[in-house]
Image 1 (cartoon, rainbow, N blue to C red):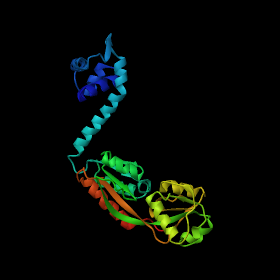
Image 2 (image 1 turned 30 degrees about the vertical axis):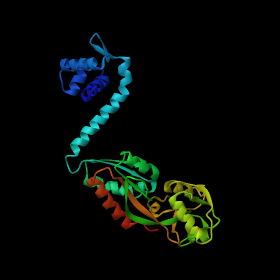
Image 3 (image 1 turned 60 degrees about the vertical axis):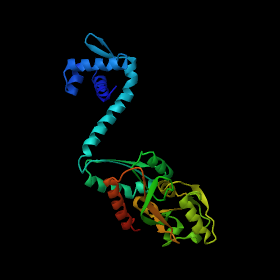
Length: 297
């Protein structure tokens, strides 16, 4: 079945009528009936039974229907994309991002891109940094944003900025009155933390070890969004990137972590892809947002 066959098949399945399908497709009923017969001849079996002027899908047609409908929508999206690419405001951007950026800077960046590319389609996928690398190499994504680099052959990474880490605490925590917090004050308290096997967790291990203190992780977590939720429930404190200030819920406060530990904002892309204008603009917008930094408080 070619693209036109799929379109005809889907329209007949939806309308359950040759006349209605012909009207929707802008052709005559005899022409549509002939096109359907040619399609059935090519695949070697009937898709519909004809009785008293009515069409009834065969078992084969019913089995094909879900996949045909999916392909039909993909074809329509492809045609729309091909048309939009001819204009400055169209295009497609498939963006992958780690969770912290996905709920802080990325929505602001996407809003800016949408103002400049009003007909563009932008897909945003939140995923762990390791999966970002795999998706970029498999060309399922055009660009990735993360708070750590991924040393994977075939990927380029560009640092767009950085953000200092903060300590999150329940609002009623005794240490919430402090202006800043360090390992000595946090020693022995339950931490909602990134494990030492993760790059960020290892950086925190070194910061604590420099003061002769071992971290006490009560709940190991893999992303900032989850850490914020755990702190809100009063489980303990968490050390996260400063962009968490954008989404702090009521009842959670943030204090600077000293000695200062920064997290880098990195743009990842495959060397196999071209240099889309929208990706370059995304990098510019993200740099500006990084320079502005998170809100104070």
